[in-house]
Image (cartoon, rainbow, N blue to C red; front, side):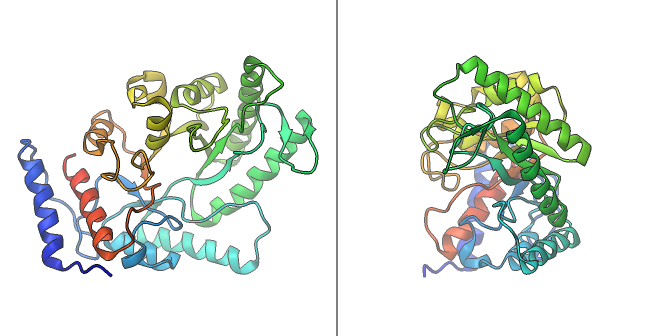
Length: 328
């Protein structure tokens, strides 16, 4: 294992502070987390299942939550998996324990990935996901969506979240694009209404077609257009910075007022590679400054892998996020 001592960590933090100071930025006195670290201002939200901080935080979901709190994080997301398979009493209790601890620690719980279909044209062609036979029926797909949402809501209640990720599925080969779009809006409106009745918000996550071929919603502007046509505060978009960069080649859609007003949360990952900021070509220092200056105060999920699994890289990533936070 690569060695990384306190002196190295202090040096990294100092380098980040000097770089920011050289830009003429002045910061308020930071608050301190229970573990002695500075409390983040931005809601950077690490999760349970990704690769980040595995060496120093471990894999135990409860210990990871405590680690996040001790390091100054004020939010988490993706802290449980939603697979729509039957759960044992033990699994349900673990979800409850995770939610109880997050609440005790004062960690805001962001969205969970639940209904972002990647293999079937569920909403675009009213097709029930099945590898055995093709079922295309509006009533059947609505029953399926309600079943998924009910299952999702039960889990969200246990972990203390109000938001989840949704998607319309793939492009259909038979229907015209306009007909598929109409189907998507109709199905999303149905889901948004059901969310409203139950007190939840769904986030449409556009996915790039290099990583996920044949996706119907493949960019932020399309996701925002769907939200505008759904006309519900319970239907927003999850702006995944990696997916947008990969699909469009830039993040210009952040300046689109229709896109901006429909953003509920962000996902963070560098492109290409979907690893930590600094591992690819995206300038996250500028990106986060822009997002903050435009007034966003919501959750930014650490939806990325880690280029090298070691304590040194864990600490380096922590120092990097602290440098991002120090500029706002």
